[in-house]
Image (cartoon, rainbow, N blue to C red; front, side, top):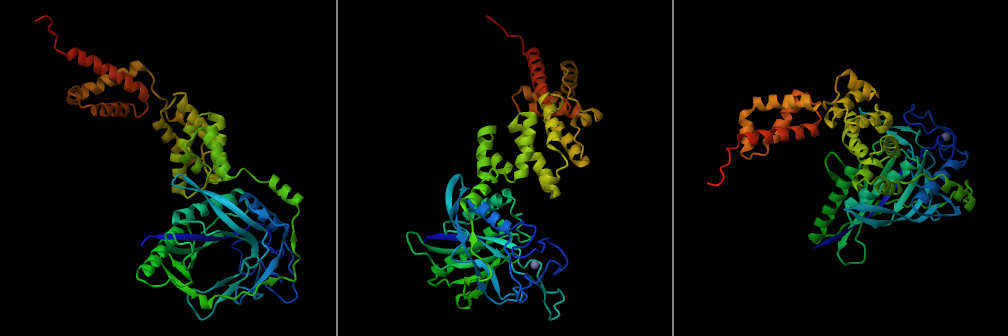
Length: 491
Ligand SMILES: [Zn+2]
């Protein structure tokens, strides 16, 4: 039987505000446990929350960037449950009146665009963290530094039909939040995390199948693997005539399996009600318009502009707009060199490879846009070959040295463009390889490349490759003509 996969995603994004959502404690990561706490975020009796205006502004930004309707009035609600990392016994969240609703995000999978609905975006506080010592000694500690750190919960419609679509949606959403500079997008540290609701149904059936909720996936790869595993698990059950049960499952990346965490009967009844300590959030049109003014060019728009303006292929545009800073780097370099495709090729091959190997981001790239531009100009001017340029780039990168011309001069790497000098070297190479020349003349065309390689070797890569090709061709043609037996005419 053939099944259709149905996936909906819930994203939790930690906001990059300086202070927490309902108190003035710092949101700084990595401080001493409980250093960033006060009576409000530790839930002491009588302490009252005061809403951080920046959180509302960030939520509006996220809503506008994902085509949502911004509610003029939204309400904070208490989500009641007991857990040691939640000192008040409830989480302040939003329930029936969230701040953003009815948006969408367009994704591209296999060259096809698809629109994924966004049901809602709401504001809420994060919980604290339980710390279990390694030498499990019967105690657990609790750290409230994270308690009350602002989160956006972004809930999609169940519009995705494969794990590829789910990952494309998550990447798109993460790009947007990072472009807006409201979330750092770090999945490993949990500042961008997601839960996936997965179900399958026979093709043609309108009713949704029973879904499982997947948690604990801290990378795009794990999201993909966990969803694929879940699809297989549910298919096996249905094919054997069984029934999928509604439950929450935890992904175990090491074992590549998911395990049941709790079933439907253990699901919480959160008994939501409006938080009496907080006024409804009022957002007027003026405020929305003012926030709209601050929106940067978003990833999809930038991608489209890069393809149109710089005439680079979709893949290049996709990679280069992967972060705002990378896109800025590209544009700054193109402004100096002009040849956009050449800049793109260099960034996609050399630059990103070095950065990846080094686990660096573009922010800390030792070669500046000016430095890369000056190197590429040397290639364009014919001063060095592309091959030599790669060596120079390596020197620039390793030494944080942006003086490409200086390196070329100091290392004597200027390209040999002198036909006479190259002609001499070519003659020597041909004289040293009589057998190869003969094979070439018998039609083994591959030998030509070998001979070019020998010339490049003699010149330590400095010969102008185009010129070597031309000169070698001429020399061989002359040789062949000489060796032809004199033609007999009029026999
Ligand atoms: Zn606090």
